[in-house]
Length: 417
Image (cartoon, rainbow, N blue to C red; front, side, top):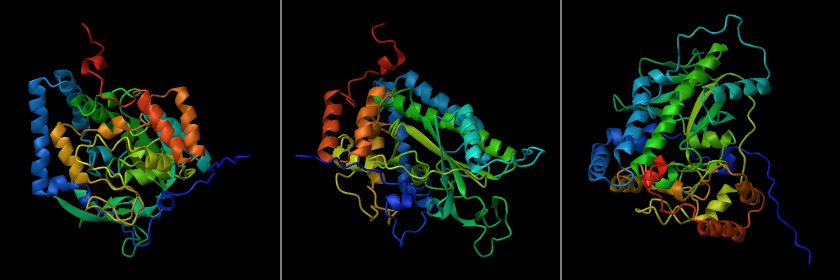
């Protein structure tokens, strides 16, 4: 009997096609993001303030993973963000300014093809500290309808210069009424990934302050990289807008840049490093070569896996199928995806005293860069059989990946001393 193997060689698509975005979809307002809600909603802010109190108590009690060394790591990483005045969620802050006073090259814009420009920007990004780089055509659906100003606690529109009343603007600008305008020519996005932890270092200790410190360190590495690459592009004579979690939804832009897919736990899963990465992006009018989204079989694998679900103490991660309906304000409707209950997630973070990351620890994609993992990834990408994906999950458990068996002292290499 001949058995015909089903190989999935679908062409590259966009994130909107991959997640079947409905015509009813409207651009998401940053004010509804949970990170913003905890600023303007007094009740949620009061709940979030409990996190730092719980963290201090666990450190004072000497809870493993909350030692002075973990506290110091998190504080040290945060200190660089403070020094740079870098906000993860606030757009057009000093370290993410939409414009700068840097002088572009006197020779004018270099004459390069989009492919050559992409090679140059990729090289520069790695020099400045990025771990992975991708390029995407800007899908405006992923740009926030409004940005949220954490100082005034108000939201303001984000417009494009081909919308009525804004045609005269050819540079990124904030108007007197708070409206921000992006020039219509800025149709390309550079997407950067920064890993947190070396190999899987740090994720093995979630949910502790040690893991949170490494996550913060990824942002601290991101900040100077993002700024320098933005200024590099401006030095070539082009407009560039740097952004961390602000201005637009990061995950679909990363998907469009070929850097991964959305996981059941609501995070980007990159085929090489899983979810232990942080995303930033730069909007620009520099012509770049965008290759599109890449289907690596992650959706089918997440359908079969479920490893992230049992350890989520408030059941914020669903066991069900993907859907279009939102669970609350912090979810976007009209996109076929797994929806995570952000309020339940926040409740569990307060309970454990950190930003958690247990789902990252449990995720079967959280692996060190070993050659042997290329084999299952090849089969996951090319053969979408549920029974085979279940077999990889079983093997992952048998090998002990994601087990809660690490001591914080192991991280610092002082065990037994």
